[in-house]
Length: 335
Ligand code: AMP
Ligand code: MG
Image: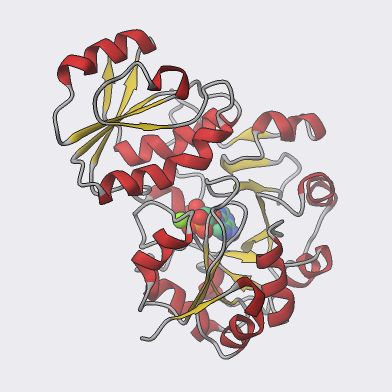
């Protein structure tokens, strides 16, 4: 398939592709999305095909106004409206009862639908110009690392989609927080840049789904997508626990040619071997912004193994670790 590369100034062409039932990749503030008309079942199926996505993993529906949320859901309740008032547009997805006209292919047969109102001007303009909600999962082959830059998207999906909108690198760098607001107590199904702590400030009862809490017996995944292997580069990923100076001195003598250590800027200059920089450890939003891009870069540079320092599972650190535990498939090194 020929893929058209579209500039953000030429969104009419991208909107036309969507209206004609084609797939279009576009930038958002979280990661790039692989979109199609959410009301057109054939178009939606093209997303699953392009990504090789399991059919039981539902898609998030992207809208460009609060009134569009009313259109794609059947119960935009008070809890959801409170979250929307504080955090929309932005990097959060609300799971709500779906409207009848949203195809089962979108919701993977569930009675609910995930809805997101992105902040990114290009995403919003595309939805508005297309005149329809756009269902869009992350723009990557299922199981691999989400794309956060145009070059990563182009390398992986050129030839698999109708169009790619060429935008900037994504601001947040990890996917949206998914919040189930169908009940009285909001439940985080997937942690993201809108953190548990931020949500509890406005809705104190907000909690994490039990499967996201270490040491609980809950085995059922928080949402269908959480049961699959995810965020995996080709290289093996190992999470490293320990003090930074111990980590540095260990790898000074143990890092092979084919291996790479991700480091924070505070220690970066002190390490003499293969390394990539996660930004400062005093602001983990930088690590969130960088992490997927660096995993992809490590693959491109041919590394076989990537060591990443574990971070405290609090705030955005919880969301980063949620992704990295999947990338590593549970492989850890304690120093
Ligand atoms: P992606 O768009 O690839 O980042 O994945 C979307 C995530 O949202 C997946 O983990 C889905 O399982 C989850 N999701 C989407 N819709 C729903 C829904 N209706 N109920 C629960 N989880 C959902
Ligand atoms: Mg994804």
